Length: 485
Image (cartoon, rainbow, N blue to C red; front, side):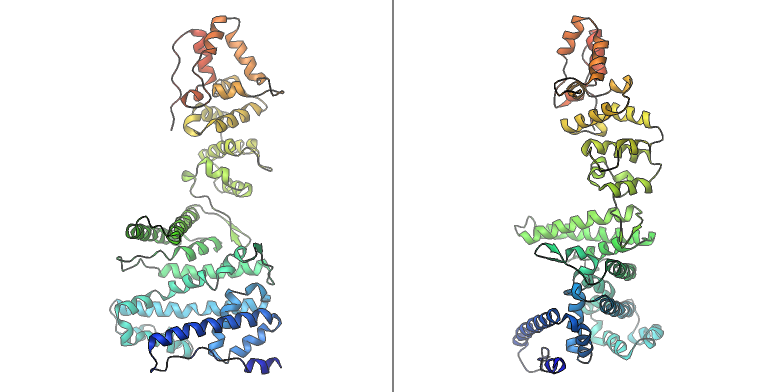
């Protein structure tokens, strides 16, 4: 009954017969194609136990085979059992070799070879291909395919393959978390380790496409289109070769040029979709650049989230990083004292972490005590920000087992005086003891200190406690606040 039902299915959309009006046929063909795809979506979703039989049946019917494979791989893959999903994905990856051959042959013709010479140059590759593949490649050696526009498309075949796959057929394989139903993640029949392995295989193929990537030759109409697959490649490759890093930077550079040209053309477009495209492009660039500057190691199935080159990473970015990402990043760049200092400052912006402590990070510094003195001395330049950041840094310093006098003197005065002791309405005992020791019994010194220019916010908030105490005792002019960034 199942086979009989299959034989009752309608045929795919008919090709143009050469007589019907082209525009009318295109409209009819579009409607028919939508219905054809919708039908197969319903069949494959309802007949999950017969996926393999459906694929075997469609293999004898080219019009159905293509759409069935695309649905199994691109739109319903969480319903496909492990072995079949791997087979369909492997078959799809094999078609990339044909796109590479088309790219190479078309570029050789573009660069001066005749079609006959191109056939001779790639005779070995052509002879190793199936008859179907040879027929496909031969189409691009026809005279009509040597025109500028068609030839430029053929020269981009390999890159276009990964571009399309990354957006469509391989989208969910590369980003399983995007497969959701009413906001909840899909449950997959295939295990996560298979998805990760397939992602790595796609990334390896994309590496070959990156090697064949060229800047857009038609600079009048540049297009931002290569960031999606490039980002997927970088995320799924266990190791990124140096040559790939350099080429990826060129892709980003070209994409920025295209985005700039697009912005000049559209200006401040009120279109929400235009704004979304611009934002998505900028987000992709911000994701890609760290991946090609930070040599992150592989994690199971996916590269760790990269933070970028140490010299480009500030404390705010480290504060936003997950704890395991931050630890792995510090491990990768062990011995970088400047990076450790930025990580210490990040605790002012994010004081609570589940297990990583300030002391853990401080122990990574080659001169931990001197680092605290230097950071606090130049706190306005290194940390900046508002009262919350200053208060948090002061609390971290005072919460340490020991806060020596030389460090205490460098703390921002307002924040230090507002730091609480064991009870909310008391000053921190270390601060209270030091202020009392310096000012002593001198009423004049106490009065001058009470009139000091310290403040809750603004430049006055950065006055150091020791500077104000010394001035109050000595009766000299008040110092200027420490310099900012």
